[in-house]
Length: 118
Image (cartoon, rainbow, N blue to C red; front, top):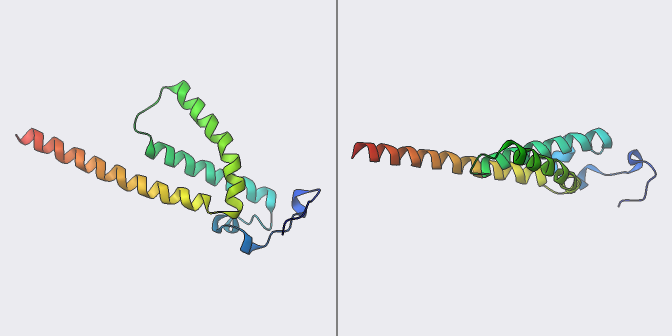
């Protein structure tokens, strides 16, 4: 059970209440460092999923805006990631999108080789 605390270090969270990634990053032992490490993991995985899932290249200014929104939007995701499997879900999404990209590239190469053969 969470209680109001004057300091973030005073919050007691058991390891069973944490997601696998949050437990791995020692959020229960060092909450501030663990939170920022978890934030870095969320941002990194969001960037990977965005790059795998977005079909076309964006101009530089639009890319800056997207990444700025990603950094801001990762904060609430990090809060959710303490108790829920957010990073793990992003890893699963990255795997699925990676497999899709590989299959799409193979399909395009097969089509190009068939068109050049005819």
